[in-house]
Length: 164
Image 1 (cartoon, rainbow, N blue to C red):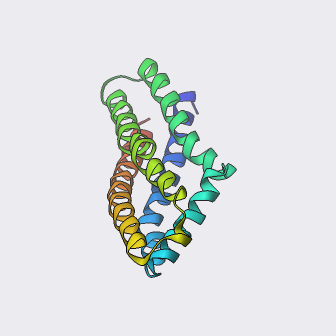
Image 2 (cartoon, one colour):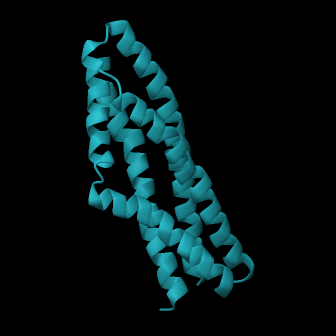
């Protein structure tokens, strides 16, 4: 197996794990905790997020590793691949960075941090509802975007891997 094949294989693995993670949040975690009242929903999400923000090692390896390995694969691929193979890799990388990583850093993490900064136990019902409505709809919208883009990236990388 050549280095570029190995790099793309690891990129497929890590990006598909990220796609599965954001999909799981979209179809299981968020609908599940949404069945709770506003206070319990927000507390549950904050508790899950604290695990991530405390640098859970496997999560960090997968999330950050996916970006680093895909970037390294793309740099390597620009030198070693040509034609459609190069295009597939560059497009997959661009979709992943712009459609998964950038929204995570600029939208989802700031929303998570804002939620973490709230003293939920002292809020009124209307205050909790306001925070929930502001947080949930925007977070879910961008998580859906991340899910679609992570899945599309994985499909493009699988196509590329089959061509190599």
